[in-house]
Amino acid sequence: MLGACGGAPSPGRPDPRLEVLEGAFASRSSEPRRAAELFAAAGPGACLEGARLAAWHRALESFDAEAGLWRDLIDERPGADLTASATLALARALARQGELDDAIAVLTAAPESARHDADLALVELADPATAASAARSLALHAPAALRRHSRDVERTVLSGFDDSDWVVRSAAWRAAGHGSIGAAELRGRRFGGDAERARRLELARCELDAGSPARALGVLPIRARADAEELVVRAEAMRRRGWGRFPDPAAGAAFAECLDEARLAARSASGATLEGALILVLECGTESGELGDALNAWRALEAAFPNHERRSWLGRRLGVSLARTGADPEAVRGLASALPEHRRCLEYWQGASGEPARLEVLAAAPIDDLYGVWAARDLGVDGRGSEWVAAPATGGAEPGFAVAWLLDAAGIEEASQEWQRQLAARRPTAAEAVAAAALAARAGRPNTAIKTLLAGIPELASVGIAGVPVDAARAYLPLAWNEHIVAAASQTGLDPWLIAALARQESTFVADAVSPAGARGVLQLLPSTARSHALTLGLGGRPNLGDPAVNIRLGARELARLVRAFGAVEPALASYNAGEARVRSWQRRWPDPRLLAESLPIPETYTYVRRVVFLAEAYRQVHADAWKEGP
Image (tube, rainbow, N blue to C red; front, side, top):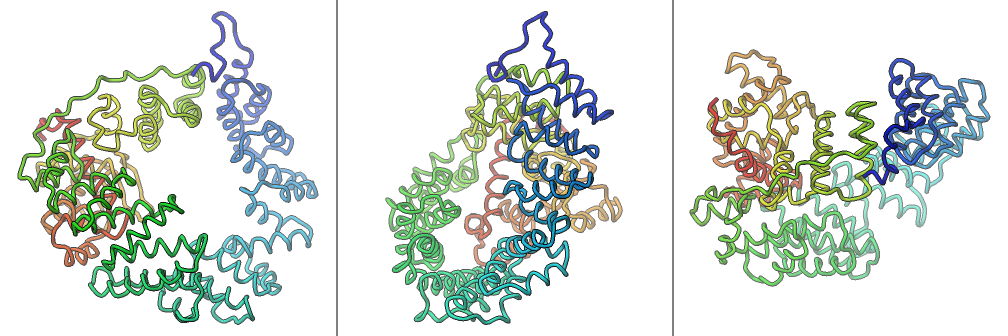
């Protein structure tokens, strides 16, 4: 660590550069201009460069810094992100100073990461020709940004679009999640020749993005006249139709149609089109029960396209289907080898389908996961009898000179960020991970703390947690407001470690956490969900969900209600994540909680159930002493 900074200054020999930096950090809030000047005066060095440049940038942002100050920062090449932001700030400063030509030159040469923001500025500042070029670029590649900026400018640009421009623009709408707008812009147009084929293909993709498989199919040629690329889009429409009908058995017919189209496409496709066709054969073959076709597609993907983003999810579903039929044990073993993160899952389903010895191995883990819990249940044994014996604590690691200096001179936040910068280039040791995570937690960044721990000790996220150092395990499984958790468990009949696991998964114990959907607090409750429980308890219709005592009490009541309603923890957790009505429709298809949990069609919800069950078992063991306390 010291080597990365060139070591600490020699005792008794003050370092002039460090004295300048100390003054810069000390004056950031009270005198940001002076701080910026001091950061510049300190100059580059072997140590503290990341912290100096980031703090210098923030200091310049806090007042209307003139162009020369921004140029000084850019000249030191502070990295891609800071350079992009500083370039835009430089252009604004030049414009304020009346140096429009220079501002335009800076914006025209802006890095790609700042291209859209630079083009927006050019639309306002530049000469007509340059402004028109920037507006056209936005209309093609960032249409939402131009529309927010000026509808009039947008209309002017669109009046000059040719056929291919409209297709590019619609693809940009779709990439930004606005397929419905892209579809609306293409529907009423008709092009000629190859441009018309491109329009129909892009329109179909936009219709799919907008949630309309029927409309997508309506603009594509029939199967007999479609080429490979069009067949893949047709198959994708049928796949989505199948999931739209899911879990109704009628979904199988749509999946079978998808399989037919995708198999035909795969015969003549190449490159990305072939990859798309094989993925569809794998998925829809699995869902329609044509497991031989799905397995062949898996093997072809492994040979040619092993890094597809859905590889793990689809391989697991195929493996479970194969294991449950018992038809090809060797194929299941091959999938388990290729997907180590799902090895225990596939071993469980092989065990449940006639190989009980596998269940005994799964149930013997010192800390269970979902499949260990199920295996113990199937064997009729108490899966909670084993005792976790922790490895000795790492004791943490002393921070290097730069981190220690920042901790003293600039505060926890700066020091923590510097440590993260240093560890980003390599895997930290276990001791470093524990210490850096503790500093991140103190800085109010618990998710960064968790990521740091996993970077150094990946076993924490698996049953391998049984062998990690005790301080690492406790850092990975923080426990706050235990008295409220134990009280809520006593009141609801839930296990306290299940409530703790829910808090860890939902918010990492952040009391004021707010999700994009408006869920609040430790257990991420929607106000509408919390209200009925609060009224029952006499807490009024607007409970303070930022109060951990209130939030934990109400969230535990909601989870307990769901457990009673569904009769098992797994569908209750799925409902907590995905919504009760949706899970009820799935439960009608799979009354067995295990089959329901394994068949969940939403990757996020499947992972959620799996993670919370594992975390609950880990909390039960790692914090065993905490659960002995009374409410």
